[in-house]
Length: 423
Image 1 (cartoon, helix red, strand yellow):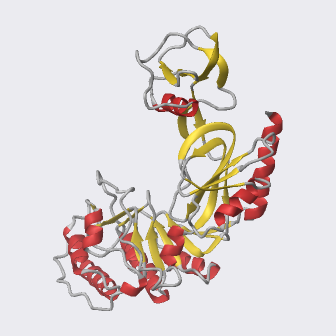
Image 2 (spheres, one colour):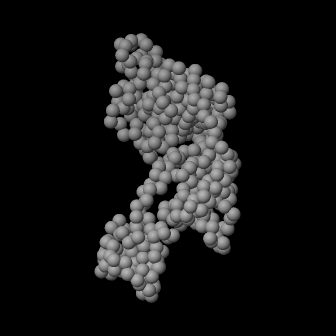
Image 3 (tube, one colour):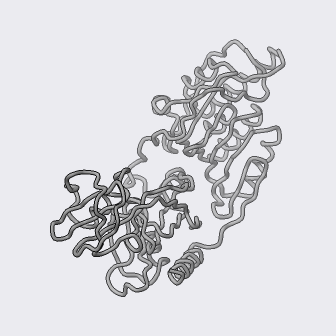
């Protein structure tokens, strides 16, 4: 096993060499620019009085930027409008990833996008201030209307914004995202002026309030499908960011079982990853059989999806991630490792979950998977001559059993051993 682990470690190093070293990141206030993604500027944090200048510094650091990703609770209204104006002038795309939020002043930044897409939470409300300056409030609202009008913002969105109290937050539902056409491709950019009545001022022009019990929609459905690729030879900025893989999450001891589109013989895990990557997005994941004792047959399995996660100590798997996907978190699985938890010619008498064998399982593999899927199952015994699968809720005393296969189940935690940049 130590030799296998050394082999897997060498494969990780090989993959890292294939993908390139991790790139550096430069920050300018709440904005970040990564050398790995020089066409993307990330906003993470409050928009304060220095954010307008910091955004221009980020633009200087990323002169070829095409996209701004957003995750901010809001902040200073004037700075939000200035940043939004820069985005509009440069025709940058804006994107709110899943599990991210863009609230209040951040919404101005989002609405400025030449292309824009919300997969996370977009929230709006009235501006707020501790000062009862009615004239200042009217001027601030006038600025907001003038800027949003240039962005082609739907009038209904403005109405929602100005009708929501400053101590509340309206989070747009997916139905509203579709209804108000908040998602927009470059071809759909509107130049039609928006006309909106100025509401009675209730606030000034400083920092935004946070939502109290607002439901931040972090897992909403994605936007309507992109234009036909036959009509649009090149992917748009947003489509490229949300579709193309830019990272691999690497797992050791985890088999992504099923969903195979191809099985091949390759020299190592790095070559398996490359075979998947060159399939123009058709291949989403791979599993490499890292057992050096297996000299023949396919050892690289390319997959249309991540498949079913299954524990296997000789498996080495990778899942490709797009810019729209967050780094995967750890998962806990019930596993029966085919290498270390299966025993030939062994019976586990007693402890059966049922008086009858499992009807859906006709092979040892199906019996193993049936036990994994059944929460109450702690082990199984498969009788080959009878093709019977017996799921166990308790362990009996092991006994010799010719023609039998038994397996023991345990809980295991799997986290990515490494997440490697492809840029």
